[in-house]
Image 1 (tube, helix red, strand yellow):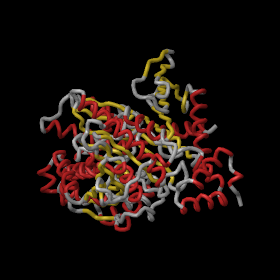
Image 2 (tube, one colour):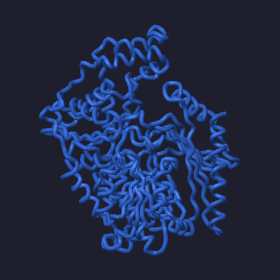
Image 3 (cartoon, one colour):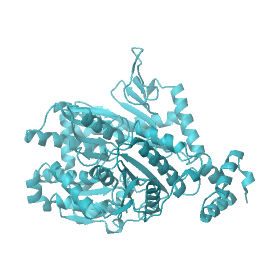
Image 4 (tube, helix red, strand yellow):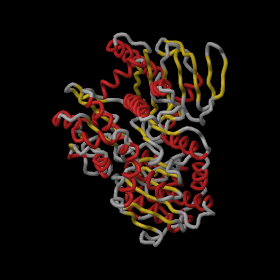
Length: 591
C-alpha cells in the first residue's frame, strides 16, 4: 500500500495542497484511495494543470489538477469571466449561455459554471434541458450573448467530459480571445481567487429549450431547404432509421426532420434514451462500425432507406445507406462530396450559384470537394483540422466585407455545417435534414447515395481516403511518447513512403512547404499546428498529427485515380494502394 511519500516531490506538493485546501471531503477521500491503490494514477491526475486549450478543455473526470471536476471547471470559468469583463466594458450587461449533454456530471458542471459567472456579475442563460452542442452555438448567437459554454466531451468514452467555449459569433474561441482566456485561467493560482454564487442567484435564468429556442432554431434552418415543395409532398416516402447513441440528438433531430417533411422515422429504442454510461456501445462514435451495429440491424429490419446516427452531443452525423438490399457505410469524405455536388446542382437550378459561393474544408479532408467546387466555378478553401477554423473563416468573411457567401463546410470526421445563419460549429441536426433531402431526391430517381457517389467518381475521378490511429497510454507517459515520436519524425523526414517518392512536405509547426526535387521552400499561411503533410509523386497524400482530444497520433491517407475506366477496378486499386500507404507509414512511425 503506497503513501504520499512514495510520490515524486513535485507531485507531493500538488496533492498536499488539495488534501489540506478548500476542497470537499469526498474529493479528499478519493485522492487518499488513489494514493494507496494506484500511485501512477495520482501522478497522471496531478502532474500538470488540465490544459485550457484554444477551444476549452476535455479530459478524464476525477479529482486532481489534470482532471475535469468542479474545481477545474470553476477555475476555467473564473478565467473566462475575467476575460469577458475586460473585453465587455462597453456592454451594460454581459451574458453567457450554457448548455450540457447527457454525460455524467454535465448538469453539475454547467451549474458550477453558472455560479462562477453570476458571482462575477455576468448574466447567465442556463438551459434547463439537454440540448445538442450546435444548438448552444445557435442560441448564443440568437440571444446575442457575449459567450457560450457547452459541457460535453463529444464522442469520447464515458469517463471523459469537457468544457467548450464559444464567443459572441457562435464560433469556438480563436485568437485573440482564446489566448486572452487562457492567460486569465493561468493567472489563477489559488482557489480563493474564484468567486462563487448560489445557483438561485438572480443573474441566473433557467431557459426551457423546448419553447422559444427550439422554435427559433427550426425557423432558422427552414430557409436552407433546397426542395421544400417536393420534401413536403413526398417526404413521408423516405424511411429513416435513427439513433442518438444515448446522447442529446433525440431532443432536436426528429423535430427538425419532421419540420422538413420527413416523418417516417424508426428509432433504435435502446439508444435514444440519454445515458452517460453509453451502455450499448464501447465508444459512442458514429465513425466506428461497432457503434452502428444496432442501427444497421434496424435499417435492414425496417427496410429503411438510410440510417442517421448522431454522436452523443449531436455535432457529428454518420450515415448508412441501404443499397440494393445491403447496408453500406459511407465515410465523412464521401458524404461531404455528395453534399457539395448536390448543393451546386440545385443552386444552379434555382439561379443562385455564383463564383462567390464558397465551401470550406480541412487539410485532412478529401481533395475531391475542391475538385467539385472548381468544376462548378465556385470557391473552396482549406483550413486546419478543427471546425473552429471553419467558423472563424465564416466570421471573417462577414465582418470584413468579403465577397464570399458560405454554403457548406465539412471535415472528414463526420462534421458538417449547412449555411452560416444558424450555428457556427458542425451541426448534425441541420445535416440530418440535408441528408434526408438528398436521399429523397435520389429515391425519386431510383437511386441511392451510393449511386450518386459512383456518378461523382466517373465525373471527377476516384478519390479514396482512410484514417489510421496509433494509440498511447493516457497520462504523462503517453503524452511524452507522442511528443517524442513527432520530434523524431521531424528530425528524420522520409524521402519516400510505401516506395513512392515524397514530392512536397508541409510542416505546419514551422510554417514551411518544402519542394524536395526543386530544393526550395515557401511559407505556409495557415496558423502553426503540429501537423506534417506529405504529397507523394503519384498524387497520394499522407497527413500525420497528434489528436487534440485523445492519446493518439492520427494518420490520414488519400489516393486518387483521375480517369477511371473500369470503376470497380479503379476503386479496388485505390483501396489497395491506400491500405499499403497507411500500413507503411504506421510501421515507419513505430520503428
